[in-house]
Image (cartoon, rainbow, N blue to C red):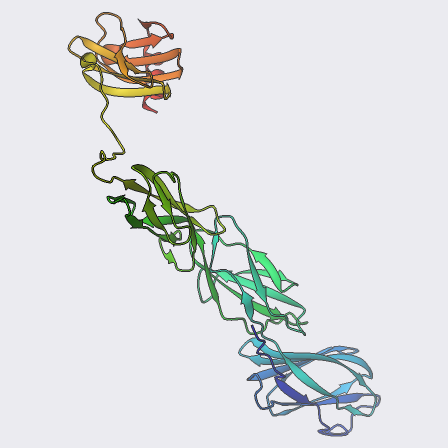
Amino acid sequence: MPRRFIVAATLALGCVACSNPDGVAPAGTGGLALRILPASGSVPFTSGRVILSGTKDTMVNATPGQPVTINNLPPGPYMVGLEALVGDSVSSFQQLSVTVVAGQTATPTVSLQPFGTVIDSMPTYTTRGQAFTVVFQRVAVATSYVVERDSFATFVTSHDTTVFDTRVQIAIPPTTPYFVRVAAVDAYGKRGTPTAARPITTLIRVVVTPGGGTIATASGTQTFTATGLDAKGNAIASVTFTWTSANAAVATVGAATGVASAVGTGQSTITASATGTTVSGTALVTVAVPPSTAVNVWSAMTVPAAAGQLAGVWGSSASNVLAVGSGNSGGTIIRYDGTSWTSMTVPPSTPSLSGLWGSSANDIFAVGYSGAILHFDASTWSAMRWSSAFLRILLSLVVS
């Protein structure tokens, strides 16, 4: 970004008076005569301050175009600070060293320097817990900088960070969009005119549209789009995505386009990952080209006729899944071994069963009506004696 700064104004400290204009200065003192003269093309200012530090500290307000004379200064070296103000902010600034001599009025000349910076780069979004980098232009006469961040564009509740470099990492809460701006700080702790506020928000989730799609022709495609959202549900326009397919034997997807192309019958998860982050969203694509069998997420399974109405299920692995319920003769338990469901033998007169829980394949509990509790030890289901306290504990485990 090209720098926009130019010499802002010329402060001509001309010889308004070669001696005290109000009369004879006290013996052994000197003076300083200043006049602020804005130049063409300068950064405008509405008021100013002249600050002296040295043998005698003093501060004098200045009006653009009007002379400022400071008398009765003890001889010696002084640091003169010159602040041109717009409202309460410094628009241009300079410091210079002046030596005051007894019986004389010092009349040096100095050029004010612009005192506003510009943000060169800053992202428009970040992720939860991730700091981001703000880079801004250096101000030659600044002693430090303040980075302000606020959820209000007016910065009424600003959180400020003082820094000494023009590249800084900061973070924001993920709950709402924020605004960031930077101001230079002069040698007297006065802030310059801040930069224009830059908005930034936190990427919380990615939504893929449509959430599911079907490709019904061998050369067919399905286009997916992704949107990054912040905590308020606002869309973040500048997010880019990388697309992947979980099953390239079913469908491929353009890494930059989100266009899925059919490869073979089946289903694949399509993922859109926000570039440079771990935030992603998914959709499901189904490829079902006639006359192939339709692809379904869920398919019906064959269970024994005696299984009856099932009410609970639990499994220790994909090849050891159990379900309980009620049949014509009372409680029923069936088991899936990864291939088929078969009935298990339960104690006689077992009432209807409604829940299952286990710590392993050889330590499983089933509960049901009339306070029934069964235990499986990897070979046999057996009825258990119980107390009301034990039943409450077991029921809480099954429900959870």
